[in-house]
Image (cartoon, rainbow, N blue to C red):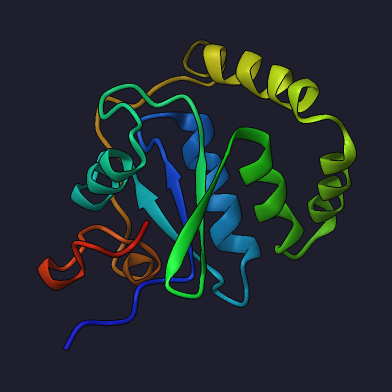
Length: 151
């Protein structure tokens, strides 16, 4: 018996120190366990990127997949970050008000940070692997029978 697909999947680059810090922040602030994290380098991450038509070897954005009914809607860049922040606890969630700024302005800032993230924050030689305590919060593989889900 397979588990139902998660409602909210956050795809992130686990070689990027900034992205790893972001995923750790989400884990700490997501007391309701709304989000399931997925490393883009994992088998599930590669499969989801392929279904979204995104590159499998260069990662320039965080992606949020939100399930509504039987399908997922994907959010990228600042849209993804602000939608995630809005659902977390703590003062940073108030930054979600930035969604009222025009997307091109938000994404201009997002793209500048994304382009320089390895230089500014560093890069790992190996992917971050979830600990035994965190494993249930990560999507690592999509079961064979769920190849049409999610996305």
